[in-house]
Image (cartoon, protein in one colour):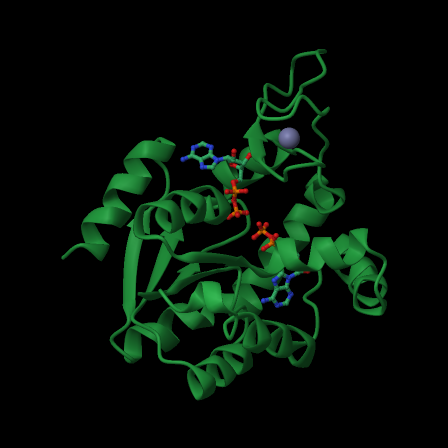
Length: 208
Ligand code: ADP
Ligand code: ADP
Ligand code: ZN
């Protein structure tokens, strides 16, 4: 299976990708995670990407396309892969279809108000990169269930940056919904239920 997960920031792509990848033994390829790893290692690519990511802009297509093309040649992608956060522009999608076939693009849809709330709650573990949703009204500190590290907010999850990311999504990424629909590859899922409800609707689509 070669899958794409589409959807606005905060739709739950990363959360669902982990479940789908585990169930079908697919390599989970998150371009956001790959870029954050480059930033953490202070590579030239990471240094270039950081200011773009923090301001809610996209990283240039050439950089991302090369990164994904290399990644899907790795042995763990032999059994299939799940792209989370890629493609994000029509140019990326056209490049992708030039070097790989794709079985299905699943688009997770969530209303904007819910996205703003989810992003305000999102915290990540700086060590294992697990994502959590916390109570923002609590004065408590939060810790990773897996490793105990203190959870942090992403630099690009500030409300003003989130608003800009939603505009960037509407202008540059949303057109992919039609792009994949016209190719007969699109499946749409409502992302508003619980994590398990959304996962069940995705499994149902993939198993039909
Ligand atoms: P989210 O989980 O909110 O959808 P990601 O973790 O996928 O966000 O991506 C974070 C940021 O990394 C994006 O806002 C963008 O700056 C950059 N990025 C990730 N994937 C891509 C891509 N395919 N093309 C361009 N930029 C990307
Ligand atoms: P994306 O990768 O699309 O940006 P994430 O998977 O990181 O989205 O989810 C964004 C935030 O919303 C996280 O804090 C996550 O824990 C939370 N979240 C994910 N799915 C749901 C859901 N179905 N209901 C409520 N919160 C969710
Ligand atoms: Zn952890």
